[in-house]
Length: 148
Image 1 (cartoon, helix red, strand yellow):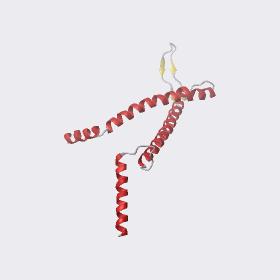
Image 2 (tube, helix red, strand yellow):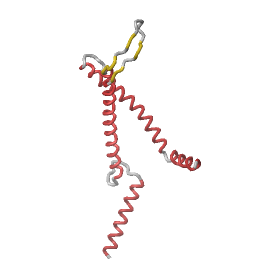
Image 3 (cartoon, helix red, strand yellow):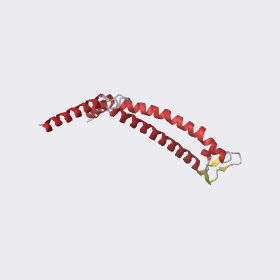
Image 4 (cartoon, one colour):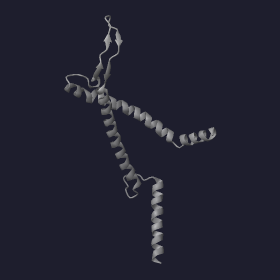
C-alpha cells in the first residue's frame, strides 16, 4: 500500500503536474497581492469618499458596544457585524472572477488556434498535426475504396 502510494506520487511529480501546480500557486499569490492593492488602494477610496470619508472596510453594525473601565481598559469586546469587510471580500471575488474569466477565454482562443492545423499564425502541437495527417490519409483511403 505504502509503496504504491509513493509510486503514484512519483509519477504525479514527474509528469509535471506538481510543477504546474507550484507555478500556479506562486502566480496566484502574486496575483492576489495585485487584486488586494487594486481593491483597497484604487477602488475603495472613491467609495469611502461617497460615504463621508468612512473607510468601507470599517463599516459595521454594532450589536453590543464594548464595555470600557474607568482606567480605559476593555472589559468586554464589541460585538459587531462587519458588512464592510464582506463587501470588500465580495469586490475582490468579482474582480478575481472576472479576470480569471478573461484569462481563460484568451487561453482557450489560443488553444483553438493551435489545434487548427490550417491556421499558420500559431504553431500546432505535433500530436495534433499527426492526427490531422492520419485523418487525411484515412479519408483519401476511404475515397479510393469507394471509387472501386
